[in-house]
Length: 499
Image (cartoon, rainbow, N blue to C red):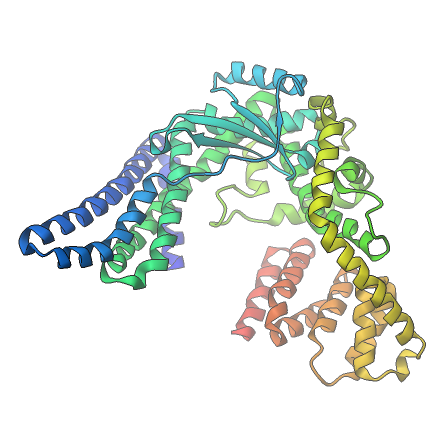
């Protein structure tokens, strides 16, 4: 099924879901059940083929040969029924070490009349989720693992955190909970099965035939379950709204989007810049997060950032609707959330917060120490090289030395120093200096200068290794300042030239 046909099928199924949600859920249940019937039939067919071959031919040699050919396919079919998931890892929170959090969870469970939280895990992500782990494989017996990211707890207010937990709990406490979790498991199972079969489809005609059957079924299965999963996200948002109110729910969605983007693009890069000067970080990430979030509020919580996030549209690659669709569905408008005066971490896990921060910072440094110190050593050598090159006026340097100085300045000096050097490289060179074009174009865009787009376009076309970063940089710049239509048009124009 091609992309256009698949998208058309999803749009059709979305209309069915809106017109008759109950009937659509029944169809998804039947289709998902059929998926396991398909697996059972494949398994039975393979076993039957071995049996009939032996009965008709009475040849041990032929039986062994056929078994050798078929057993890998049988193994793949059986494995699909018993696919196992790794339990979430992290710092376990309990009633003893996080009593305030468990008071909130107890009230939530009582109000929503949902299943228990068997485990509550604190991890290092800017996120929150609930994962159902089956105790008896395909036959159920789920244990609910609530996963709370420490960065998320440090960044949002207590009410916003409760809203987020309510959304996640809504997936297992709401009417769609059991079906939604079951369908989610089947999506993963069939994805895993399809990957195994694709890797083995050239091993024999049997494997190729099974892969062809699953490959033909999978697009329809994915389309139906995608639409149900997307609808379940809206239902979970309703649960959050009912518990904390529409404004608090909208604030949690907007803050999560804006702050999450800033962490990804700015916080970590700023942290790692310490390695230029220091053999060990002066400040470690988790100990500094809450202060960094608050002190940079005017950078990540701006009307321009909100406008850019609001322009992003829902797509067919993520079951979560886009920010604007979710906030509008709650009956709210795009409003910047106020600064956080008390974080959810302080309010809900204050007893254990210092220990948790120390644990995550210690683990982070254990993982990063070797790479950090290796980079610091390179930075020291690079700064020495900058001093050597800087003893000669830039105009007197040959093009290769000038390019080296410009690129080292980008990485280890300020952009104000790097910009004129990059401009000089590009004006003097007649060759291919795509990295310089990319860095110069990026600097111009940071200054809100559209001239940077031409440099990014040229670098994207000339160097395939830079294509993705160039096009994404330009796309998000245009999305923020010119709108989605301009961003998409530029993207299509560049890729048309690359193709």
